[in-house]
Image 1: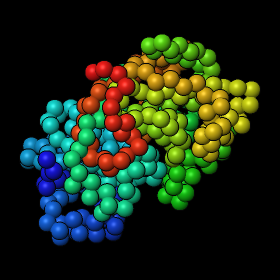
Image 2: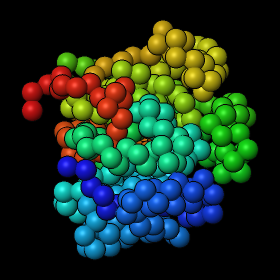
Image 3: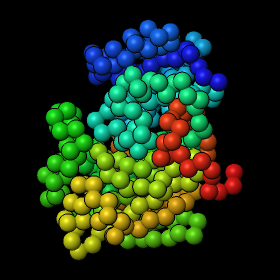
Image 4: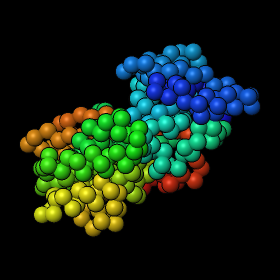
Length: 304
């Protein structure tokens, strides 16, 4: 059943976005109810979701980047309420939206509210949910430390420039990775554990990942002798080059341990840990996606 009453949780940086204002006005003009609430400080997204659910809204729209999408999704999951979620992609890189082929034009993105939501998986790291991808290693640090000013000017290319400027800080991490029928250990430059397919401004680390197969796609980029060349290929989005050197697997869960903390980025949220367990909550969230979204496999690879 398609919901006509929705609430947009809009990232505060987008409050004066003329395209968003025009899209909301046009959506209302054609008879759709769309309330708007704007975030101001950390924690607002979760609070606004709770208030919306208490007011009877059962369709939420996350207006922002992958981080905003994760915040709103997390609040929905914690609520236990059977509500659905759509994405109005307004971030710098919009990695999840690009992979899912969600329209980047605000009004076109809102039209997905007219489509029935589909059940999608949610990844977890030590119990912390992520919808798109968990990344680790130097590439994750690059994403976390790229300045907002640089992203405004260069968009996704800011991640590449930051990475190139920080080669002097480059060092490999060591980790042991264990999952069903999978084991690997060694030095690595970058790590991607994908429910979605790309991160960090277009780094397509898990090109075959799906959000409805009950599995996580794993990509490990080992640290070879040509460290600088390999990381340059990664940061520039060189998929073919990365595929020739990376270790890949598809698993329902994965355990990682390391002697030192590994920098991890969960949909834009930086963290670090020595021991991690990644797992999947199958079909945990109702999401409005295009019917032919590449992220939808159509049927699970494992029995539920």
